[in-house]
Length: 317
Image (cartoon, rainbow, N blue to C red; front, side, top):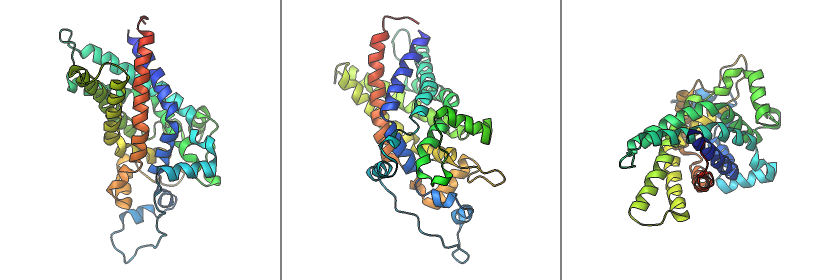
């Protein structure tokens, strides 16, 4: 029974991840807007913390922010349609490692903590199961997450600065050779925090909304209920995780050159510099792409999961 949950969750997650990959790529590009010029120059810390105009260094104003359609159109125009699937191999590996683990563990914990008499589980325990499962899954899948962010962000860099990874395995191999094994877990604290928030809010919301709909007789246990519950879960997960996701993306994508200080010392430093340089709402950059990706991802995830469960219902493993 335990392995079945891992298999069901893994298959559904891979299908959902590949289906919504272009939206995830656009989200990453939007989250990195406003960062390029400051981070690529040694003036970033000074500009970020400048409080007096007397000694300010005059820098060109940041380029205007571009929306979802603008970013998508730019990618297709400058890099070609295939670029929308940059890093898709990393997505497959990430879902295989991260989502298979979190979905399987959540299923095991939820089953273990469900009251055998009432067949119910309190929301607090659902959230706890999500936090635990998400954290462990993120730790397992972080190398693929770093590779995916870098592969998705590569096209926005000047040609001379691009990493040009051939695949997720090539990306991981180059990171190990050039930056050490520890680079595979760069930003892992943010990945784990984000995964805990996403898993807890996403899975708990889906279960709770679905149970409420069925208990009140609003809809039958079918596609309509699954889509409604999934959409609610995706929106809640987006609101909870976007600030952490922005910082995670920037920390993972930063270029570290030997002998020079990295752009960010860590997640907290990145958050402070981002807010001071770009304002508090910078933490919600890419929010609508996040919702646009998270909502269909969650719908595809749970609709696929429900169908996979029907296929596997007569199997015991």
